[in-house]
Amino acid sequence: MKNILLGTILAIFAAMVAASPAFADHQTANVSISAGASSPGCESKNECYVPSTITIDTGSEVNWSNEDTASHTVTSGDPQNGPDGNFNSDLFLAGKTFSHKFEEAGTFQYFCQVHPWMQGAVIVQEAHAQSSTGDMHEHGAMVMSQDGSIAVHVDSNKPKKDSQAELSVEFTDSDGNPAMHVNFEITAMQDGNQVLSELGQHAHSGVTEFTTSTLGSDSPLDVQVKILGLGLPTDDPATWTGPKGETVTAKVVPEFGPLASIILATSIIGIVAISARTRLIPKL
Image 1 (cartoon, one colour):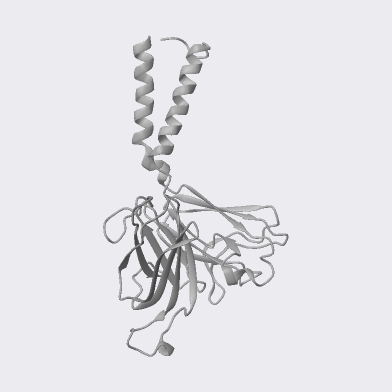
Image 2 (cartoon, one colour):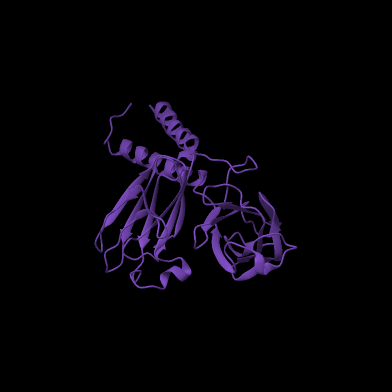
């Protein structure tokens, strides 16, 4: 009996570890409509919908909850061009929710038809999508500019005390294509200490890589990217187009990884062992 029970435990453990990538997928994402969003002002900090931009896998669902006292809509499209017909919550009251499942990859902008300063975006990627370098996004974040024209993708390896972290920044347009000639500045903080500061940067296209100073802990990195405009660095900055002087902030944190699966497996093993002792399951 002991050998069979031990084999069962090991099988459960192995299955949980093998299944760990499934736990890393974005199956459900939650977005809240912040209190006070019915009054202008939240858009200045991208805090009307929180988070204002999220990244999920195809087949995942986004759930919006109305934390405001006023009624709102979640309507695909933008205030300039109106609804595009992909999804629409209609008006839903305070305390209510709206959900939508995304089956196709792409960037889906949305807004509130009653309060058009409220805007957000959902980035839908193919399951287990890879970066342009062919590597999985290990510890990444993505933030959209306020006008929805530029997405800033920030990736890093796992922050580790007494080591340097490798950061990469990629700019894409609303369709996911590389944004050309982006002028920007980037800074990174960890536990209140600056570990990276690069001014006057220019991304012709693709990924730009940076290395931090030696880190003081394993804590996540807070990265700020200031978009200065789109144009050749030799041109007069006054002629640059796109977002100008806009700062986006991203917290680069580890993904939900194998350790969580191991913990979950350990919990199940404990349940099996306890159940066997209390005769809740038949002995083998």
